[in-house]
Image: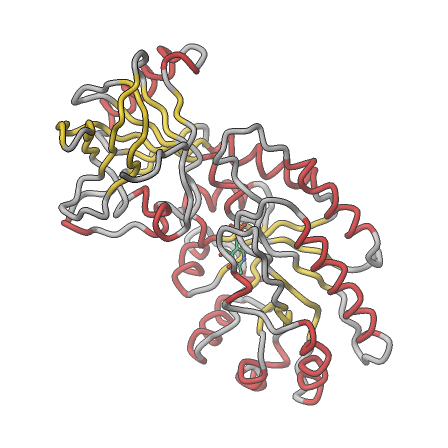
Length: 387
Ligand SMILES: Cc1ncc(COP(=O)(O)O)c(C=O)c1O
């Protein structure tokens, strides 16, 4: 038997005024159908401001890949945020809002020539590389760009270890900066991503210290000193619903940054922390059965849809039901014909009826972004509140 699924599950007993919440969700379903993803713009504004306060002096570039949606872009735009982009599709999304390429960093370390030209036409001037082959691709465009060199800092605690795939090792930095200089390419500074959804800030701190010392060493003899440090993303979402506090999380990062020269430009590329809590999934129980000692609930959204992050992003989303009482070993499955399409296996929960709602919290990051249309089922419609 599979292990018990211990994710947070909110029931009638564990929530204040669940009737109001339920009435609100039911109203949305009546108006827009099921399944839905509900984006609350106020939550995004709130998180953006909290991260700004937690990292004063750091310019925030929203990582569009986390949830490439037009409404989300418009909120970040109004807040004066920048954008971390990695593809022509992401640029197209920003173009619809007439956002200048100058407010973006192109962070994909590996680019085809066409992609570089698309980004230049869009107006991007900051690019990221992590090896000599990529530096050479930029030679023809060197007068129009500034480059960040991405450094790898592997993290055991990150749910998604992004330094596994990209970034040169700290040992290669000095050599690559001098190779760039010989090619006439201006390296403005260093960047890193310690991995997404980290447990604590230890890797950020280690990476800031290491980059600080490398940049100072390079600046001793550089014609044009390095003065930009991009500390990436990684700031976690509160999937455990444990009252995560970004001020406390960032305190050691603030300390590490306070040692840097005051004229350096520090930027970050947060995705998950900003958008995960701003989106809630609402699904409906479409069917129910009793099989092999479990109660099975079949939803109208699942692993191929809004819950795709459980597979691709290794996230486990807190769930909420609007029933209480005795709990039974249950399985929550998605709507496709595939048996991998299971949202929660062996979860203890109150008995639900067909037509009941199941709500998923913290579902804004790497959810809709990775959905597919398997079985040609309709995907969740995004509804926007408080825009
Ligand atoms: C280059 C880059 N920047 C920023 C992000 C956003 O990271 P997070 O969602 O952990 O804040 C990612 C995530 O994949 C990334 O690859």
